[in-house]
Length: 355
Image (cartoon, helix red, strand yellow):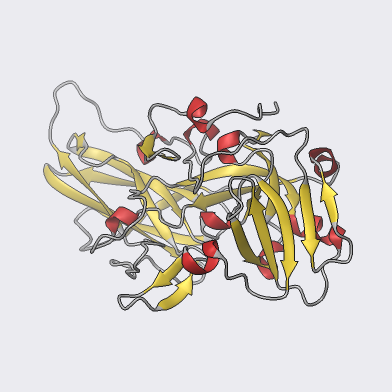
């Protein structure tokens, strides 16, 4: 169903989600059961407050270096060929709290990432209607949440087959918190690239150096020098179960979680039950497409005492999660090997932990 235009993200809040300020919600990994995250559990990241957008009057303006500037409504987009992509979106600052020394910004743990089924029109197909000129190299998207929410995306990424102007999430119309009535979905890139509540697409002949490209979402070293910008996200895995500080019974047990990469598909996941001294291959139990994360599992025999579990992933480009991520002053792209500390002890009347 179509979302009422004035709906606020707070009306969608699942009490199990973790609030970060007034506009952000994290997804505790231990809540997840399947490869697709339900919409009500999907993390929420907004740089401004959720805007009021009326789907009936919403328009998308395509302009700039195009032969045929135009405006499209929802009915126009729905009349175009639709496609679905299962894709993971990770906030660029996900896991920021793991950096040492600490960096400014929302102190996400590992809870600003999710995998969903996105349905809409290929962004390249939408841009083709306006006829981008040969000198076009950048698409600047405008969000309805604030006039300053303008984000540049290279045309090469905008025209990738899986880059969408999405109208639906998990088989239903987008809700307000996730960008209704239309948003970008740029698989593999930091979440900032997937502009929500998009109202404009401008073609340009230069790299966009606005606030959300050249001031925020840049990688700065210890001296404050720019070493890059947030684009594709690095390879990463997380442990969903057991949760931090969990108590589990001795004997057969399972470690499970998710892995993904913005540079390719996941080739392998390895798990250590001895604090990272040795690793064994985990089993990838489910895949949902080249842009999705994978679900993995590892069976082990838990021995009594404190135990540190770690997991690391390797992608098809040959990149493996590092023990220590490259520190940057704004705390982006944290992909260091994740550790979960648990206590193995006999608990009367309790069975073995589930998947």
